[in-house]
Image (cartoon, rainbow, N blue to C red; front, side, top):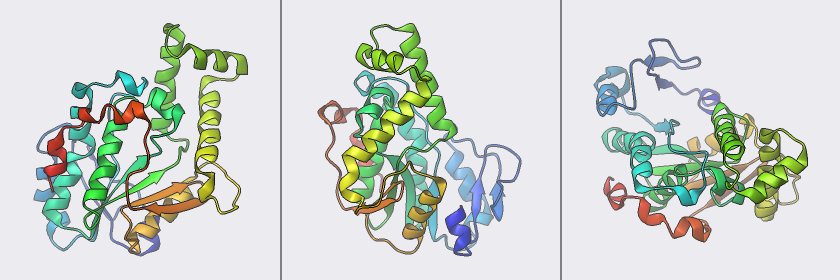
Length: 266
């Protein structure tokens, strides 16, 4: 929202509640993405349809996390796509904005493959859709920053480690040996891997964890016409991609979990 404000844009936001979204010029209430008619309710509001929409920005995401990517099933991926992807594809089709923008993460990181579970395949589908439709869709892939969702995933993973001795025992041993809270151990491990795996994109700029202002910079790039389907924001490091990144075998061997019809919706 900060990037849109900087450009003087009119912002229309949605919420499942009956209270205004701070910073938005207009709020559409009562939009529950768990309901199949959520997009229809948005489109029925003339605030949204009275004039052309330049950009749709879709932030909501939900899915099975706190487990290893290899534990994912098709039954987990389907409802995640219904909540996290299908609504913005419907909005893109109906509103025909310049671009529909969604958020992803650096799913190839070993630390994330251990705890991001079925959401991994939702993010892969989002990225592949943007690659397939670069004139309509765009992904901003962001590094880990301290948000409620990240804290929630870390808590779920910690609970697994505490109750299941056979859940990544080598990782559990590293955590215990560190003497740190699990969240601190996980954040530091993830940041270390971000720096090591993507340092070729740093151009000599020192690494630091991603901050909200970095994400604002990524959105500014998108709003100002960056043509690449994927914008990467990793702390102060910014770069774009035209194709899918190399993913580990534990992900690529399970891409069949993503239903093929998701790629036929646009």
